Amino acid sequence: MSPITEVALVTGREVRRSFRSTKGVLLAVLSVAAGAGFSMLFAWLDRVKRENLPPGTDWRAAQEQFFAQWYAPETGRALASCPYSLWMMLIATLWLAPWLVALMAFDAVSGEMQHRTVCFWTIRVRRPSYMIGKALGAWSAVVAVTLGMNLVVWAVTIALGPWPAANVIGWGARFFAVTLPISAAWCGIATLVGSQFKTPILSLLFICTAFFCLWLLRVTAGFAQAHWLAYAYPNTFDALLLSPNLADAARGLLSTGLIALATATAAALAFQRKDV
Amino acid sequence: MSNAIATAPRFETAVRVRKLGKRFGSKTAVEDLSLDIAPGAAFGFIGPNGAGKTTTFSMLAGYLRPTAGTIEVLGFAPHAVNTLRSRVGVLPQDALLPASDTVGEFLVHMARLQDLPKNEALAGAHDALAEVGGQAWWKQRCGSLSHGMAKRVALAQAFLGKPQLLLLDEPTAGLDPRVAYELRQIIKYRKGRTTIVISSHNLHELEELCDAAAILDRGRLVACGSMSELTAANEEIRVLVAPGTRRGAEPGRVPVQALRELPSVKSAELDDERLEIVVYFERAQVDAETVIGHVLRTLLDNQVRISGVTKGRGLERRVMEVRA
Image (cartoon, rainbow over all chains, first blue to last red; front, side, top):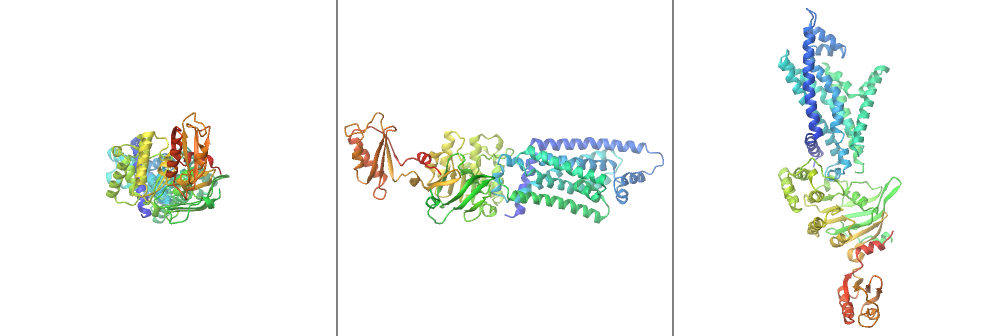
């Protein structure tokens, strides 16, 4: 049996398991509900902002100025025509991503190690395939929840206006695509850290600690003027991924992909030699 | 006992272990273990808690990496998953089934991982579950199964794909006598067609199921051989006499001297406390059944009241006698 088939079988089962558990269902429902709530709030804020603009103000120029505070000028120009609520939803999704990944993925391996359920798999699945499948399964589950959240946000944004549906769906799909490689990187890190422990609570604790340390590196980067250090925190790549410059976007995609691949591979190699 | 004596004769083997060792930090769980298991045999690992049975078993199944020595399972290293996946079935000790899967989903998934196409996996899963008498549990969640049901489902997954080798770690541990009996019958049904390796504390079960066994103590192999060799079933017989029976030539008493003079008998002793007569005989000249006949005739002629007769000393007694 090819490793790809093995990985596909493990991934499929992992996704089913994620949405069959009470935890998975609860996280999905809460995430979608939160998405609906936030999107309504952002859409309302957007409308209030528009209504309170001084007369004669160029909305697009105002947006461009706003985004220039967050991104490079050319990215700010490119984002000027996007619905504000969708961009806020992207920021919220990126903020939520590590939490969602930690909660969805913390017991994927440790839960099966704790009760020796993993013994049923290791005689039938190559260990690297098992680990890669777990990482992919976690990512697929997170992507599914994020997509659900985004679909609700798009629907609310279209319903509340004033943006045309094509504009909302176009920007929405683009922002959703930005979250994919970033959440993959988080899933890789969570799988690497979480799989070192046989107790789910320890996995959760150390995953959260690892994520916090990465966030600290990003904060430190700001103070120390060492901007390269900020890229230890996967969310930082959103600026590259949003750039209209294809080379920047490719660099962002490659970097986050490499983080995901490297961490998942490291997890697989560590599991290869582990006593279960 | 030296491992040279303890190792079975070499011939084509299902499992070959050479100088196997496993350390956990400073603790040695298994040391210098060598043995062969013949194809088609039912082989037992026996020993007290901490003897190294489960550690050895886990190394055979690929769960643990040895720190010394080599293992060959059907000619391959235990972690050659791609080759062994459909040839080896394992029942791990104390491993919980995935709680959120239904029994059917779990078995089909396990069958799919053996590279069976979907429809064959489904049929195979149904067959394996039927073999353990669990057809009614197909749609039941694994987390809701009783201990006995879960054990049967775990056994069913070991049976998937008609494996050449079955590794069963404590297959009847924690089960009520009826369920344990049924599981033993299921395992017995496979004897001769599949190589079976069983690790168990239940010596009567091992004596019933196994053709050969290895006795481990404190991580070392202390005895290995066929069940009749280990229990000396072809070297001695034991006769229990009724309470109050004494030795002597008078009627109603055990004529020890007369027993010693029987043909092919090497020696005969009466344990006055246990009320047990032990008769050792030349196994090259006579079989246990013939000796039993002579001994019983002599005792009955002397009007001795007999409570029971066994061949050999029993695995339990053998294990108690053996120390590393």
